[in-house]
Amino acid sequence: MLRLVGIFLCFFMFSATAPKVVAADSDRLNLKWNKAYPDETIDKAALGLEWTLSFTGALLPNSPSGIYIDGDTIALDLNELGFNPDALQQLQLLHRKIKDSDEYKKTKAIDLGRYIALLIGSSEHYYALTGVPEKLSTVLSNYQLLPEKAYVNHSGVSKQHRIIEFSAPEKRKQLLISTEIDSVTKTVLEYETIEIIPNGQLRFGIYDENGDRSNSAKSSHSEAGKPAKCIWCHESKISQLFNKQDDFPLYQTYRQLQDKLIAYNQYLTDEKLQLKDGVRFSELQQHTLSELLYISFMEPSAERLSREWKLPIETVKARLSGLPTHVYSEFPFLGQLYHRYAVEKLAPFRGLPVSGNVREASAIEVNHLR
Image (spheres, rainbow, N blue to C red):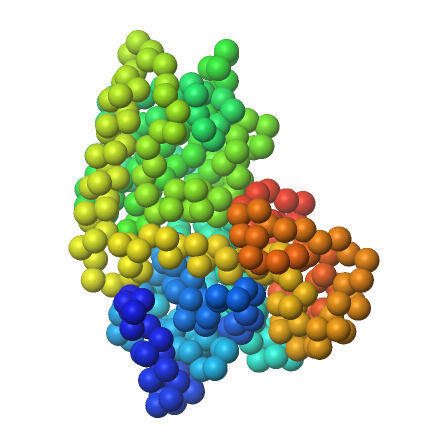
């Protein structure tokens, strides 16, 4: 991945000298960047895009990168992003659906934030791109779990108790699985998996009590949400425990589990820092640029909508008249915001629909890969 200090120069040189057509039309997709906050630049947006592509399995070879900037548009060349053949086939299908949308036909591009929301805000899209199996049994068949287990009764995520198991790390391959159980009956309620994939990222899976893949964790007993929430929370790391746990017979102690998780994360960190291609794992906070892209799309300001819709700000504000606004507490600099579901019907064109929420389960969950 290009170093942050040089990314603007490299992109400027490309936009000034390189031909605009970077791939055959079938393999090229144009993404429109719409500035959402004062400090945002297209170079930051490109970094956020790189992290999103990395989350979904792209290797992102440094040269060529497959990401090309021209003005306020980013062009993707699918063949240069380092996706495996199965993921590439799924992306090509999604891109065809995008190009058939009213938005793409009218603007010759898709909003960058919409694209991010489609990649990771739809659990089915994320699963298809990263290759998360439909059955837990398939996941387990690829690993040898270690005999020791750990018991967690004060989870910072689950409202229930958890049994934690893991395989031994083998370079960039490892499985960690959490079995959510009822604290009284010990009945299995759900499974959550974390796998390390070749580009150094974590791959998240959620399975119901029968081992069938789910779009999200059940809110009745977990705060885990959808895979995109796992991505946001874990920050490409194997997280250690937030709360102290009680010790139980036949299970590892709290201290043993904590030490093991710290050691596994250090092993993963060392492996990631040896990678020559991909995102810059030494700058983990860059992942926030990905989150800002989908947050500012799902909860846009009037100013951002003015750029997106190519309408004067006065016209946009008139259309939005009567709609409530709010401030995003984590990023108040985004300003007064609206909800995408409330403003979408007011747009001058129709984009390919996105799920109602990127991180949490919602009434609208899209799957454009069927």
